[in-house]
Length: 312
Image (cartoon, rainbow, N blue to C red; front, side, top):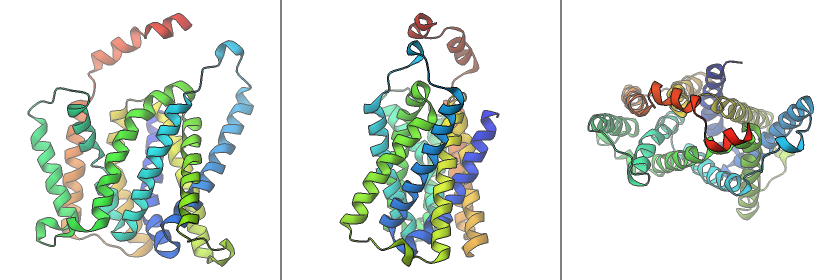
């Protein structure tokens, strides 16, 4: 399947999760939603991995690569923190707010590149940063004097976006070494452990039999959509550039908004729609400006690293 089609599937799956997460967290809480989603996602990914390995067969001794367990555990830990912030945020604010503010991960990626990686940032970037910040103010209602930026949900969503940008820096190398499904499986396995401890520690445990049929259906849908997103996203990352994935994921807030309107009659205000356009438009500009040039991509393909040459 075409890698860009995988990205489109991932964007649709991710956007559809936001209104369902809002419903689930309000019905059974953050801990139960996170634990149930992580368990179901892990089961789905384990099945996908088992089927894939059965079809391909076991690799020969010379084809096996060492598994970077330390990196995978760190990715899973950061992912668990990100998911916890996301679920807490979506319980406190709207699905549209969380979906839109999550796309500020592009802004945080820019800051990390400038401060940590010492990447040279051109002056043309700063107007786009201002556009995104204005969009954030419109989405949260801060620009209208509503002071909603101080609400915990919006701040938690911005914190989640920061962790998402950190995780994105680590995922691409890991996917290239061991494959996307294994990275996703370790990620969700650690999420299961963390949310399980959170669930027990918060004394939020209740028998699954006590949940209503709609709640069980939403939790099952969340697990399946999460697995579909991870498999699609990590599969696409093996062949596409990260900037292409970020560009496609700008459709996520619109998918979340349409889902919230259709399922729960949660209609964004005109200011929120305008803020969504500014955030996503500014992010699109940043992604386009920071994409690698075509010539550098071709040089990288024509001259693989020395380790790869030695293996071949």
